[in-house]
Amino acid sequence: MNSTLVEQASDLDERNYPGDLGTMEMNLTAIEHIARTCAERGVHSDLPRQMATIAERAIAEGHGDKNYLAVFEIFKKPTPAS
Picture (cartoon, rainbow, N blue to C red):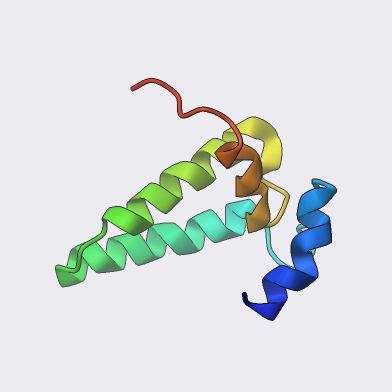
């Protein structure tokens, strides 16, 4: 396991996702850029688009000012019906 994740394990346990080094909104901007670049270059873009959808959901649920680990709160919930 990556040492960064090990260091952040207690934050996950405590549902603490400080956005002081980067917010979900900032990450969404980067993910959208990656998805656009993939599409422009003809590279498979399903994964970055799915990541963007998850980040958008996290932001909609009030985690926009938290770091990317806040997606854990999204993963704990059932997938909404399509």
